[in-house]
Image (cartoon, rainbow, N blue to C red; front, side):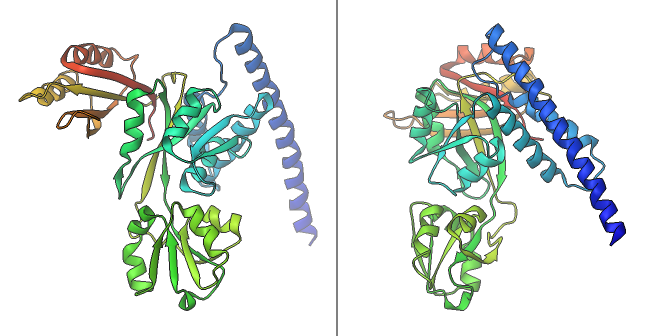
Length: 357
């Protein structure tokens, strides 16, 4: 026991050192905020490219034993608490609480931020535009279900920019007040996660009634009062609604990710790796899209995504959403966009932002 106590004493000493260093870090961050305010550099102190660079540096320099995800979580919370020393960030997300959007927002901005749930994606955009929220988090695509077209539609009329992106794994859990899977008579969940675990449910709960809900959160709330029912939702819902986890990771494909966009009013500065998103429409004539693709090819710009979307109120005309590798500060991107503008009926640069590795 004496040896264990010696080790614990050493841990206590390290904790004391960590406390002093974290407080010192906070003091320095406050000074940076004061300098920014004095120079009128930026309305917000959240700097995505700086945070991304710090996390990449920490992970690269780590010798273990902590996994990369744990280190990122710790430093995200430090960033969050540091920003809150000045003023907590107000983050709008597609609600209600405990949804995967809520989980992604917490993961990105930390628990010291203020999270505001909105009933729909349009409301997230509107509240950020009006200044009620500093940033918004909106889903844009899922690796199984595909693109969330409503998010793309909102960018057409909104002046907001993409500041950052998150690729969040979607882990589905079967939750219930009961601990016995055999007693489950009905399953509640949103149609999208239902489609992502349909095979698992068919194998493990054949014939059990599946009832669609407006969100995974509302499904979890419903089964609190129904002991023979279960909800398909995220882990956060189990914690908030005090539900038992009957089964975990029930999604049919392990590679199930949702990509979220951080939207705001400020342009993101250039990071080590960058992505630029643009939206445009072109003349409805033979070869017009091919000419656009050839333009990017000549300038050696890689397109990581291209998505077409029908134009509202204009049947059979399309809007194209494209992700490019690079930043608008890059000469090749600038040259391409200048040429693209001459070819388009409509062109909007949605933002350049740090690209996930």
